[in-house]
Every structure is written in structure tokens, then in C-alpha cells.
Image 1: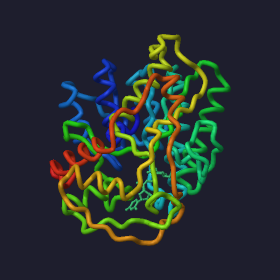
Image 2: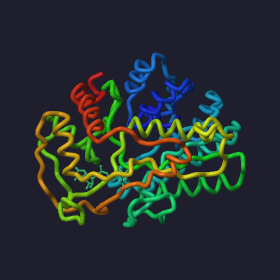
Image 3: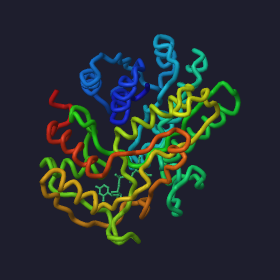
Length: 342
Ligand code: UFG
């Protein structure tokens, strides 16, 4: 697993270990913490091997795969801040696209051609027709989004060129929440870009108030609507996709080859104000808000049609918005400074 010490990666390691898989993590720790993996080891009852590798280092990626000899790769390692990608596009393409090319070449060299890729609903660009299905038109609105769009296309082309490849393009909606143990969770560096980590830091007293980016959208309460999905549901989606590609899917058929996109979302949208209210209930804390103008590039509404993942992977998101907030709060209140204190 690349990026396995990060937020979604660490939760996915827990679920893979619970299913009896062996996991080797490659991570450069540029936006992740070795402490997260140590705690994953605690939760799972066994240690996880960490190889400190930067995916842009082609030789290091190959050496790591030669050591790990994986049956399959789950590829999370990437940069993900939309605003930063506008300022530093070359760095985003180098890491996200170049890193994936290095990985594909190394996988081919070691004869491993089963890949689960961390894509995003961002590949639907500025689509307005909801819910989004895997056949909705693709696009992007910023360099980060284009890197996910380009990598998906690269992987479709690779899979088309050699029938031994099996690739899952998992399009995440808005991952939030934390492991129910409260031991691992999202630990953004600097000011959080995303809604739920920001709210959590307000509730715990690290920040004064939430800024709501626009309350004049064409939505029921005027604030933006998104499809929030519990990170443990998301992690289970990766296990299901891997099983499908490896031949141990819910329907027990042979391993599926070719490239396949699956939305991982709940199918239900929640507004910013609904998330704030749910978090206040979960935490028992008030979350002060102020309303500011819209953030550049934000759409009014985005939510998934998750039927394809249900039908083909046998996977559905089961956890509610309240659970997402309760689990985030358990993590944030127990670790107010994230992993830094450890
Ligand atoms: N929001 C606020 N205040 C904040 C942060 C967010 O009001 O401080 C609002 C946003 O305007 C939006 C909603 O909360 O309506 C969710 O915003 P996030 O930044 O948490 O999530 P986005 O839907 O904007 O971002 C997600 C992924 C990105 C992806 C992007 C575009 O996190 O990886 O979708 O598809 F690129």
C-alpha cells in the first residue's frame, strides 16, 4: 500500500489486516505520521512494515516492490490540497501522475498487475446532474482534479494494453470520521481545508469559528451539499474492490480484469449546516459559524449514485452522519493535537 500512513490509508490497513491480508506500507511521511501506523499495529494486534519511500523516486519504488513482492497494490500516495495544486501544478503532476507511472512500471517489473487506485469524485468536474453515476461526464476544475482525471485515463490505457491488468478506480465522495477506537483519525497539517476537520478543531478549541463558504447556493438551506462517507465504510470498499480483482469477491467469481470505476459514497447529501448541527450533537460543544462568500470552484451539490458498487462489489456504506461525527469527536477530543503529542 502506498500512502498507507495517511488518513484513508491507515484505516484501510486496519480493515485489510482484519481480513487476514499481509500489508507492507510505502509512505514518505510528507503528510502522514509513523505514529498512525504504530497505532494501526496496536488495533490489529500485529506490526505493519513501513518502507519510507517517495513515489517520485522510481528506483526506490522498484526496490520496495522487489522486497514486498505484493499480490496487489492499493495506491493512496498523492498530494490532495486543491488550492495548493493551483499554486504548484508541476509538483502535483509529478507526484500524482509521475508517481503512478513509476508504480505501474515497477508493478509490471515484479509481475503484479492488480491495482486499486484512490480516485475521487473530483473527476466529475463541475457536473450538475445528480446523483453522479460512473457514466457521468468526466472533467476537472483544478490541477489536483486533473491529476486524478489523467491517472484514471493512464490506468484505463494500461489495462487496455495488457489483459493481465485488473484495476479499480475508486471514486471517493467526502471521507470523514475516524476509527471507532479513537486511536487513528485525520490529522491535517496546518489549517484544515476540509469541512469536518475544521469543525472538529473548532469544537476542541483549536480554532475560534467555522467560516461557511456561501449560504446562497441553490440548496435547501443555501449551504453546499456533499455526500459524506465514513472512512471505515470507505476502507471496507477497498477490501471489497481488492476481493473483486483478486477473485474472492462477494459473488465468488474469478478475478475481474480490465479497469473499472466504482463510486464510493452513501447516495445521500448533507448541507454544511446539517454537518455542523450533527457535530454539535455528537460533541456537546457549540460550533460558532460565520458566513463568507463562496470558495472558488465549489459546486452547490455533489452526491453519488452508489448502486454499481453495491451490485458489483457487494459493498454499501452503512454508517450514519451521526456516527461520522461521534467517531471524529472521539478521535479529536482524545488527540487534540493529532499525532504530534506522540
Ligand atoms: N466548507 C465550508 N467551510 C470550510 C470548509 C468547507 O463551508 O472551512 C464547505 C465547502 O464549501 C463545501 C463543503 O463544506 O460545501 C465541503 O467542503 P470540503 O472542502 O470538505 O470538501 P469538497 O467537497 O470541497 O472537497 C472534496 C475533496 C477534494 C476534492 C473536492 C472537489 O475533499 O479532494 O471535493 O471535488 F477535490
